[in-house]
Image (cartoon, rainbow, N blue to C red; front, top):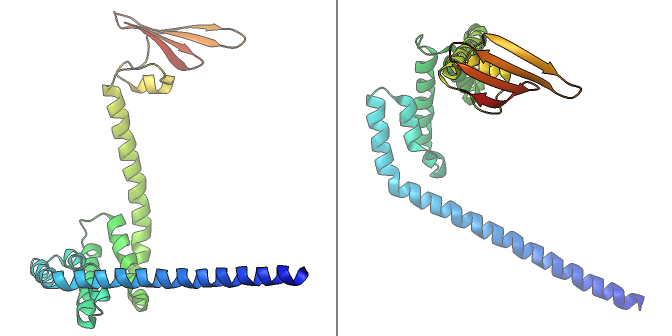
Amino acid sequence: MAIAIIAILAKESDRSTVSAAEQAQFEKARSDSAAATSRRSCEEKKTLAVADFEKLMVAGKPGDAAAALGNCPAILQDTALVERQRAARAKGWELVYRDGKRSPVDRLAAVEAALGADPAASASFADLKRQLEPKAKAWRVAEEARLQREEIQRRKREGVSIGMTQERVLQSSWGRPSKVNRTTTARVSHEQWVYEGGGGYLYFDNGILTAIQN
C-alpha cells in the first residue's frame, strides 16, 4: 500500500514538473514574441523617429529630441543611436539646470537626473546640487504657501453649504458673523451666527454647519 502511494506521489510530482517546465517554455515564447514585435515596430518607425530627433535638435530642444526616440535605440541595440540619445538627454538636462529662469526644483531635478545617468559626473555636479537643494526647499515652501493663499481666496468667493466647518465658513464669502448665540447641552454645542443687515443666519452643531437661513 505504501509503495503504491509513493508511486502515485511520484507520478503527481512528474506531472507538476512537466507542467512547470511547459509554463516556463510558454512564458519564454510569449516574451520572445513581445520582443520581436517591439523590434519590428521600432524598425518600421526608426526613419521617422530619427528625422524628428534631428529637427528637434536643430530647434534647440534636445530633451524632446531624446524623448522622440523612445526605447527604440536600446531595443534595436543600435549603439550609435543610443549614444546620440544619451548625449541629447545630457544636453537637455544641462539646458534646464543652467537656466536661471527655471524653478530651483526643476533645476535640481535636472541635476539629479544627470547624476543618475552618469554617476562619474558626481564630482562636477556636487557643488551645484548643494547650492540648489536649499533653494528648492525654500521654493517648495513658498509655492505651498502661495497655493494655500489662492485656496483661501477661492473659498472667500464661494458661498456656504451644509456640512462645512466653522473655519471653512469663515474663509467663505460669508466671513465673520456680527454676533454669535450659543446654547450648550450635555451632548451638543449649538451656535447661531447672526449676519446683521439682512445677511442671514447660520446654525452649527458641534462646529458643523447644519442649517442656513437667508
